[in-house]
Amino acid sequence: MADVNKKSIVAKERWKNKKYRNMMMKVLKKNWENLKGNQINKGRKLTEEHKIKIRSYRHTEEAKSKIRGRRPANYIDGRSKLVGPGRYGDDWFKIRMLVYARDKFACQDCGITMNEYGRVLDVHHKIPFLVSFDNSLKNLITLCRPCHMRIEKNLIKKQQVEV
Image (tube, rainbow, N blue to C red):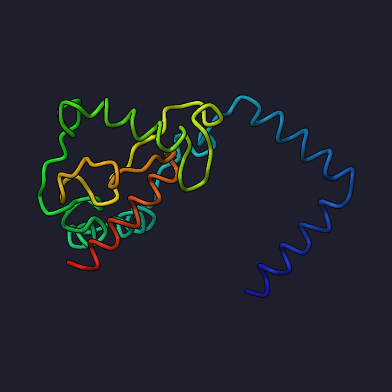
């Protein structure tokens, strides 16, 4: 270990010398000017020891299942997450407009307006629609996308703890 430290100290001292640094830069530019990515090692054969080391880093199926878990992180009780105009009912567009108007087209968490945000704001169900099937104005709130994602993430964490 001490040899490694001595070598690195010597290399640092050499690099401080301007002539040495310029000479090394010329050599590097001349030899590796056209190389891209990992072409420096292109054509080199891996030793058996190196191949074994690389294989040992692979995850087993057991480890993969622990990393993944049984279900996606946003999974809730096997309910369908329909996407499209019919998801929240036929009058969803009208309800959304009423919520926007009530909240003055601004995120109720951070206060950014739709004009400042530059995109359409989200309408969030305080009690998830898949739980309550409630589209009433008291259950809806206007949020920008980052605030909406943060609140949804916290909601999912709470539900996973309760289960």
